[in-house]
Amino acid sequence: MNELNDLYQEIILDHNKNPRNWGKIDNASNFAEGFNPLCGDKIDLYVNFSGDKLEDIKFVGNGCAISKASASVMTTLVKGKTKDDIQKLYNEFHKIITEGCDHNHYIDENLEVFCGVKEYPGRVKCAALAWHTLNDILKRVGNNE
Amino acid sequence: MKNDSNCQIDVKKIREDFPILSQKMNGKPLVYLDSAATTMKPRQVVESIADLYFGYYSNIHRGVYLFSYFTTDRYENARTIIKNYINAKYEEEIIFTRGATESINLIAHSYAGYNLKENDEIIVTEMEHHANIVPWQEICKKTGAKLRYIPFDDNGELILEEYEKMLSPRTKIVSAVHISNSLGTINPVKYIFDKAKEYGAVTVLDASQSIQHTKVDVQELNCDFLAFSGHKIYGPTGIGVLYGKLHLLEDMPPYQTGGDMIKSVTFERTLFADVPAKFEAGTQNIEGAIGLGTAIEYVNSIGLENIANYEHSLLEYANQKIKEIPQVKIIGNARQKASLISFLLEDIHPHDVGSILDKLGIAVRTGQHCTEPTMRHFGITATTRASFAFYNTIDDINVFIDGIKQVIETFE
Image 1: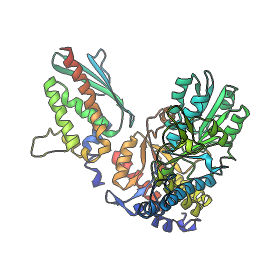
Image 2 (image 1 turned 180 degrees about the horizontal axis):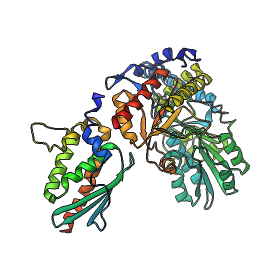
Image 3 (image 1 turned 135 degrees about the vertical axis):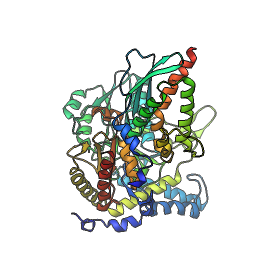
């Protein structure tokens, strides 16, 4: 099964089985729903912002291992970060799944497991769902200021 | 274990007609189990299209030179082949479209849009492909007619008592899928249509998944309209068929207007051509029609009965093997089933199943199969579907079963 390891790495399988920050936040400051009508993947994303800082984040949803692991990894990366830092991570992640990994540059080790996604064009949207949903929230938070 | 050579058809020889089946995918010999989505094309079909373009191509119905006659003959000959294949009464009852979707839209807009009134009713089943739901929803919005759905049980069989309760003089159209693309159920459409006829309703058959597997006789089934796509019966993409009873087609307004569908045009008024030309506006998909004609001749040369028997033996073998895997849950357990298996693998998402099988050279379909309401019945969003055609082998199924086991191992 070596040919599969580029996509289904241990980390992805682990996050799929034990998603971090799984659940809902009562009275969350922000909420967004992500939906991929082609495959039926769905995510509910709850976020608490304190000023510019993302204090807490949780999610629930239905989806494949790639979408669930991506959401789980994302929550661990963005918690405690400012909007600007999250935006940078978003850009980096987006580049990784669409263009692949440029190992001449520093890549956050938590995002490295998604380097193989580019080779599966049908799965790029699965990996992107949680990040796009968070991006929707970021845009709204930006507009409120 | 059953051996391929015991069957009525020579699968080894047939596979030689399908060069793509000798290709590799991701470095592994291709195991193509997605024929319900689209079928591969035999050499004969592709060659008939090449012969057209390299040998005698020209536009149809208008040239006064020999090649135009040739092309027109071949195009019209395809119509005759299809007419015979579905046992229609007249050539004029066969309309070329872009596919089953366009055929159903044509019926909805031209027949239903013209004839239905407020509170009339259209009945479809709950296991329709979106293509046999959405056009009716749209026409209901325009006419004020109501759309009703025949429910099905957890095995994937229609609940006919509910259907019979629904029928009334308000029922104007009953449209049903012959074989469900996501469950494999073979529906008792003759019974359904006979009942519809007791109330004078017009009957529509979506034969997209049956036309390539089983005899579809429009007269015996009592259907007024029938739709199918060429690419699911070994023909090219972009061509499909609408069958309609002649008197119905004659009374319907055109769906599209323009060239080749007129008798005479003045600036004040236009006299439309007779069927089938009335419904074939503009230059038609000539290569598609000719390719489809060749595809149906190819199917005839193998024999539908042989095809049905062989595919059924593949289904039985696959069923037996897949049921030995305890993690598998089959979705759709109708007593009458076509050669496809929709299934779940515990909580492993079908897209993960599909991606892993892909790496092993196995092509299956994953997702909701354009049947969202059907998926909702089972409280799921997607399944993995393996579908079989006469070019598949017992070996294909063995590789597939082994692939499923590898998926399970990956997620253990």
